[in-house]
Length: 163
Image 1 (cartoon, rainbow, N blue to C red):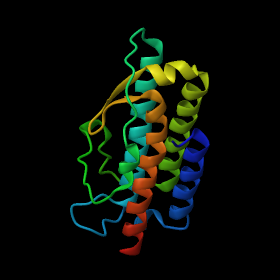
Image 2 (image 1 turned 90 degrees about the horizontal axis):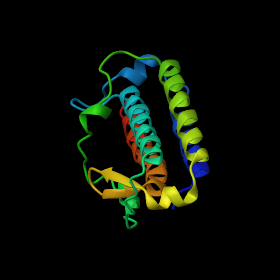
Image 3 (image 1 turned 180 degrees about the horizontal axis):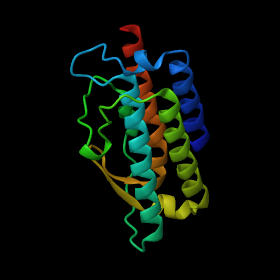
């Protein structure tokens, strides 16, 4: 099970892998019909923002639906293609690395704030659905953020090799 500091290491790795690339390279589409590197980063921002909001909403709610642990490490299997829900599909517009880094920094601060204020028992006892894994505990959602970023880090490495 990943912890929040694992998420920090993955985020650092993610940002290190894109440092040194120009905004033109980051916005390029090395493969037709696939996201650019900047779009992958934008998707990660949208995803973290959505998960943070859902965790915060669940923590405020009286609803308590425990969920059994799911094999979320399967997130790293890139053989399995997953269609992103509409609310996390990245913008088509040109973005700079600094713009996207600012957005990622903002959502990470909000994510950590929500997680840090949560009671351990609530993280275990409350859940909300994931498109593939169905009900995931808030605790597993925290780990999922890092696994999801690691999955896309591998995708970014592939895209970089095709630039």
